[in-house]
Structure formats: C-alpha cells, structure tokens
Length: 572
Image 1 (tube, rainbow, N blue to C red):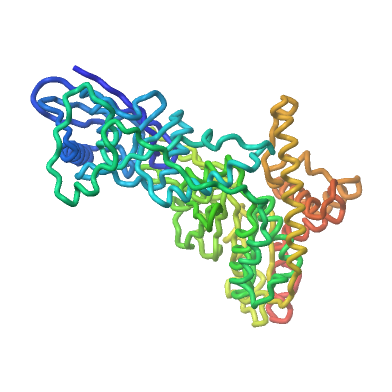
Image 2 (image 1 turned 180 degrees about the horizontal axis):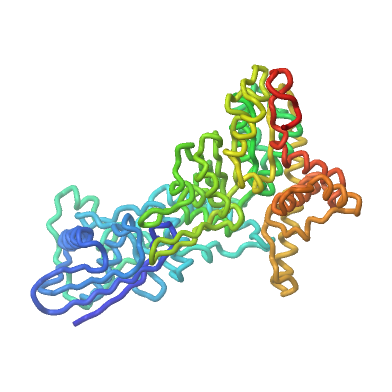
C-alpha cells in the first residue's frame, strides 16, 4: 500500500478561510476509486471527472484500488475546486513525481474531462487565504482578471505605507505565490513510475492541449510592471463624482456646508450617519459621495477585501472598497448572516466598505435591530447547534429615510402627518438603534452649494491627523509602551482620548446631554474629535463640541411645521 497526503486552502460556508486535508492510499486489488468525507453524489461526480481526466492525459492507474478521504469544514460550492489536489494526491500515491510536492505548496482547481484545468474564480482570494493558512505556493490556473487583480494589489500594497507607517515589504508576505498549470500533464516531473501512455487526442486537442513538455516547471503567475503608487488623491475622485451627479459646476457640490461636514466626518472617521429628508433632496446621492470619500486602504484591509471577493477594479491599480445596498425587503438572515449551512450576510460582505440602507423606514424592525451587536463589536457571532462562526462586520453605515410617513416633511409641499405620527414613525424605525447613529442629518430641499476646495481641506486634515495618531500608537504598541492599541478611525477611539479642552466646555456638554445614554454621549465626544481634526485643532474646543451636538439628537425635534396646521413645534 502506498500513501500520500496534502493540505489545501479553502473556505467555509460562511466565507472564512479553512484548511482541508486530503489523504490518498493505493493498494492492489479490485480496481475501484472511492472518495469519502464529502456528500456521496459529489464524491461520485468528482471520481468520474478525475478518472476521465487521467485517461485523456495518458495517465493509467492500472489495477489499483484507490481510496481518497477529504477532511475539512468546506463550503459545498467549493468542493469542485478540489479536483486538482485530489488528482495530485492520487498521482503521488501512484509513484509519479509532481511539481508542487515540496513543503508549503498546494493545488487548487476543477478538472475538465479533457484533462485541462478550469481557471480558478477569484484566484487572488485563494492566494491570500493560502498564505494565512501557512501555504506559500499554490498551483492553479488563472485568468486575465486575476492578473489585473494582482497588478492592483501590488500597486497598492508594495511601494506604499502599511498600517504602521513603515514601508511595506514584499507583498508576497500577504499572499501565496501563484504558479500556473493549464492541464494535468503540467504537474508531471520526470517519473520513476512507468511512463504514461499517450492519449488519442483529436486534431483540435492536439493543437491546444499541452503547452509544456514533461518535466518543465510550472511558471509563476506574473504581473505587468508595477508603477510607483501615487499619493491617494480624492480630488480626482470627487471630480469624477461631480461629472455624474452635478449640473456641470465642477468647482462646488450641491449641498450646504452643514451637510458636507457631516459627510466628510462620516467617510473619514467611520461615523455612522442617518439622513432624513423628503424625496429628491439628494440623500442617496450623498451616500454615493461618502463612498467616493472613503479613505485609502492599508495592507490589512486589502487582504480582508480580497478574501471577501466583493471588490471591483476601477482602472489600473485602483481597487474599490465593497459597496453593499440591500433592498428593504431583506430578511434578518440576509442582513447579518445565518442559515444552514451558515452564510455571510450583507454586514460581512460590506466589511471594510460601505453598507447603505436606503429607505430605512421600509425595513422590518427586527432586521434593523439585528444591526446593534455588529455596530458595537465589529463582529457577528452565529451559533447553529454544534457549529459556530464569528464573522467580521466592520463597515461604514449610512441610512436614508423619509422624515415622516407621508414623506413631505421638510419639503415645500404640505405634510399630512401629526407630531404623534412622526414620533411613532421614528421610534418604530430606529428604536435602540438611534443611540448607535453618531450623525443624524436632516436634509431639506435647498439650493445651497459648497466650495469643493473646502471639502478637500476638511477631508485631508481629518485623514492626515488620524493617520499620524495611528502611526504613533502603533509605534508605541510595538515598543511595549501602549498595551491598548486603538483603532485607525476616530469612531473607534477610547473616550479618554476625546476629552474637551477646559472645564466650561465639559459643563456645557453635561448640561446639553442630560438624560442621554452613555453610548450616545461617547459617540458625540468622538464626533467632536473628528470636527476638531477637520479644523486642524489639537484639542476639542467649545465650538467643536457644539457642532457635534448639532448633528446628534436632531430627530428628537422632528415635528411638523406650524405651516401645516397639524402640530406646534414643541413636542407633546
């Protein structure tokens, strides 16, 4: 009996990287090919594909009884990609010498009946996962899109700065080395086993079958020359946004200064934003502006985004963050994850990106309340009997909704709602979620505009100060002087780092927020820190605290105007 084993990278049903182990044993006996460890129907299909690929490639196992066992908590949709590693493991047990048998190497890909290997979808995702699992080299078939993805990754990760402000090392430390194999015969080295029998190919297959001779090493997956990474400029992104969403004035944005400072704070410091207003006032367009303003990614974020496979390549060398926009009919499982087997929800698919909940008032209440734990911890914990998953859920949250049930509150049209109806609408829509919304923005139909240069100045100041603070804390953590390393953005700062300058500002804050929850108060402190950073101030002054208070608790005063004749400005 001969035995061979192999470790391969894969993904669980929840999208998390997991390691699978493949074992193969051959013995003399009745010819049979049995695969265990996966559902019987999939095992039969895999065995048929591998046997056909062997025969078409001239590889004859002879009169052998072959047993294969696959162990690992793998997604059912991923099992087809195990054809190549199972075939390689069987060939190793049969005595063939293969490329990729050295320690730290593995295989991945689905075999076609002709013996060719199908290009692996999202190859770069598997390269990152392989490196995380300790695999340094992965033999698979790639596509042109994979080359573009690698080019973009190397452009963003290699010449720039990492999260600690240091020069990044070789991006290969973040992903495994990809080696291209086009067909099963490309795996073969010189073999001490009997030479394979040449298959009877048709003329078409002869012309396209094997591009390399036996023994020729599988080449690495290479990318084009990578240019130096330019400084991340959001000015160009803003102008692109304006060309699609403005009336031709590229020097200003169609929002007031009050609205745009809230948008910059939400995008640059990861503050959650709730935007209320009548239809057509620009709520959804503002969410698109916030997405265009999301900060540049560091190397760790790039890895997580590639693992999710929900990224887009926008031109040479630019990888966009995820932008998820679930419909208001989405269920709780669709939003936060769950099911059997466990699947990632929208909050996980939006990890390190933007989650836009448009028409927030139309979502079911239980769906919205399920966001409370992910917004606090940045994770979703799902338990299903013996199976448990902890899924990442660190995202930018933007919610938009009408200001009242009829939707006309804040517009020039007459609102048909009473103050009690508006209050019930708000409570049903938000509930306990309101404490977790750092910015509550009331938009009206207006004709104000704000200079684009001001927006860029606020944004660059906010991002620059946060990055400096992040680098200093990371350096202290590496030196052992700071055991409580905080997050990258102001929304993740400890409250102790967001104290006001002067006793007068603190007293005013306590008076203005009397009766509010500690969570809401802490959110206002962090928002005031962002306002100070946008102004270039080292300390949080009274003006920054008052500005943050303007964005907090605004929905407490949502009532219909006296012009509508339905209710006074004061609440009941």
